[in-house]
Structures are given as structure tokens and as C-alpha cells.
Length: 250
Image 1 (tube, rainbow, N blue to C red):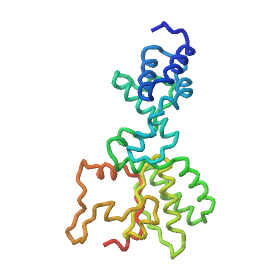
Image 2: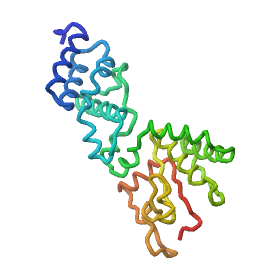
Image 3: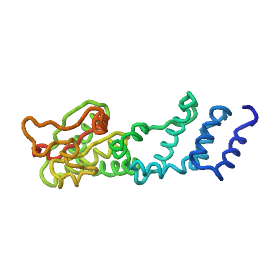
Image 4: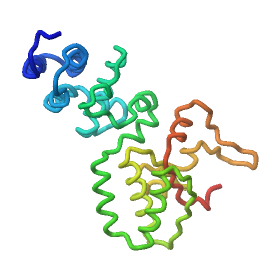
């Protein structure tokens, strides 16, 4: 400590290390710098070298069911891993107030593949999709969107029934609402009572598959979702459930 005089020395250290070392090794080095070398502007070092520090994370995320991770997801995951390394030394990344913080719940993401699949959406693409779709909404569609989105974001627990005639744009509205919730890093489950309708929903599955509804069902039938399972955790963390054709559910 104190042998290197300023951040230019740390910058040169990272530049030289980036030539030969892997992303995992660079993350370890970056943590060492934070803990023992006290850089004046660690956020600037992160911004300059984050591509090198995270160069091995695309493969790691693909292994966790994120087929096309964005740069934002890679860097966010990198910050999460840096925080984990700091925690092993009894510290947290939040102690370095200049540093950005990870915004996604990667701990749950790593442990639960069902959560991983639901959190793997490309957020910038979703944001653009929602912005484009909202411009085409009529007043009734906007009302439905605002009501459901507000409930999901603020955990109001509303039950909303959306009805329209054929070709009334109901599926379009449902997909837009789901995209808006997912763009906030939250979980929206989409399902339908029939396989054909489920296909029309982005990320859609049949309700039988989503909620483990037995086939056939009887008056005393219950869904086989056990406490502490991955599916139970997913449902507990879900902000919105969109269920198409619910009156047809047997």
C-alpha cells in the first residue's frame, strides 16, 4: 500500500494485466486494487477496463440460459461478481460510493434456472418495443396498460379482466404490458388455457404447464407446486401474471 502514487499507476497495472490475464483474473486484480490500493477514482478505472474485466461473462451467461446477453447485462453481472469477491473479504461494493452497483438479482438468477429464463430478456429492446407500441394505442388500450402496469410496479395486487372482440388487439396489449414489466427487470409470466393462444404470447406457455395443473382435473384437484422449489420461488417473485382465455380453463 502506498507504493503506487496515483491512478495512472493502477491504470498501467490493469493495461498490462489485460494483455495476458482472463476476465476472472482481472476481476480479482480489480478487487485487490479496491481493497489495498485505494484508487482515487475507481469508477473511471471500471469504465475504462470493464470490457476486459467482463470478457469471459458472455459464455457464463449463455450457460445460464441467457442466449444473447447485452453489454449492459455483462457489465451488471461483472459488478455482481466483483461484489461477491469483496464479500469474501468482509466488504461490499457499496462501500466504494463512486462505483456503479449491480441492478439485477444475480444471486437468485444463478441458483434458479426458472428465474434465469424470466430475467434473460434484452431490456433495451423491450424498452424500444414498448415505446413504439404505446404510440399506436387507442384510449381504451392506454387505460388497460396504465392500470395493469401501475398495479405490477407498485404491488397493488389488482385482478383485471380484459375483454375484446376478435382482432381487438388484446394480445397486442398483453404482450406490450408484459414487455414493459420485463423492461423494469421484473418478472411477468404469460400463459393461456390453450397451446395455440400461448404461442401468441411472448414467453407464453400453457396454464397447465405454468402452474402444474393436473390433467384431468377434478373437484378436489390441487396444483403440485411444493414449497421451496424453483417454481415456488419464481411465483413468489412474479410481479404480473397474464392469463389468456381464463374463462375456458378447465
